[in-house]
Length: 236
Image 1 (cartoon, rainbow, N blue to C red):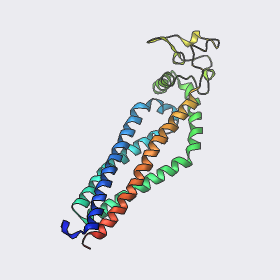
Image 2 (tube, rainbow, N blue to C red):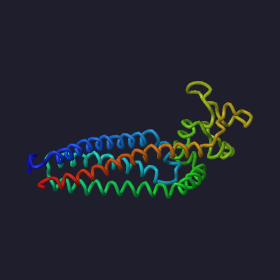
Image 3 (cartoon, one colour):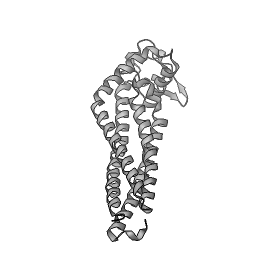
Image 4 (cartoon, rainbow, N blue to C red):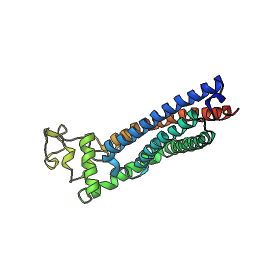
């Protein structure tokens, strides 16, 4: 199968597919970068979410990014070397990835309301494990410190065992004990609950990752179109 077998139109399709796969590769790198960022930067609240859907979706997106990068090389060699079996394998793999991302997006949209309800119930249930479960304790301390919030809906959720992380630092590294703070000291204690802030955080993160996934999925459609066109042009 030599390069001379392609006419001018065929060569245009060939190099269009090459460029498309370069963009797909870059898109895969973006998905990988977003997945790593999500895992390292937002993992502190995972213990409070009450579901593995959020962390699971991040790992799926990270895996998809790695697979997309690999598949782009398959498309590159299939187009440059004009190997029809590689183009067929490329089309099948890209189609399966596209369907997976599409189904994931639909499920995320359908279950978004349920996830919000689950989040509130899980956060309320985790309060009683504070101080007894190390993972939950660390998650609450990290969440309240980083998001500058207290409790689920307000500091009153803690009753008489308000954690010190509900209070602001009076100096770098110095935090007043919340046991000594009353409701008449709103400047020292965080008054906003963590629920709405966490919801907003998860939604913003989901929008970023979801948007990146949609863009890559659209580019994958171009990859499928060009692979079909090039397949027909080879040995025509």
